[in-house]
Length: 138
Image (cartoon, rainbow, N blue to C red; front, top):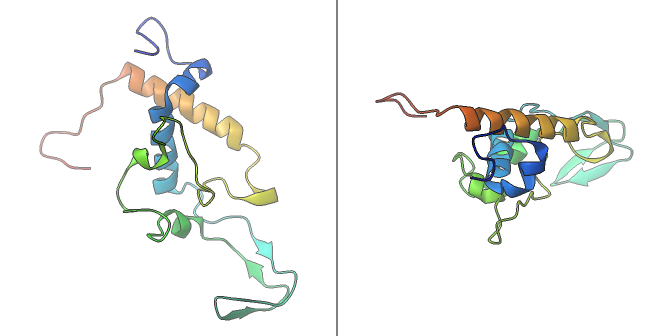
């Protein structure tokens, strides 16, 4: 109803389609397109969670584990776009959601990628009626 049948969705429609944005975020969380983040080096000796990590140690964040951690996400195995939808209907991304990495080394193309994902996904949903085949489950 936001877009109508006379045209395809555009980036102008994004703010009016928060649930579509939440579905894309949940796909990114569940799929972990890049399961490992950019390598970092420990700059000094530290102790973390009882583990001693010496200076110079290479650290590779396992982003997929963060996105599937039941301490951070309720029922992380379930596909639930509503986890990104606030009660007022706005989209909320928690700090521990990081499909494009985090910090200074996060993916520079995140903004472009998310725009393209929105245009592709919303156009696909606009033009086609996708169904699970009879007798099959996702």
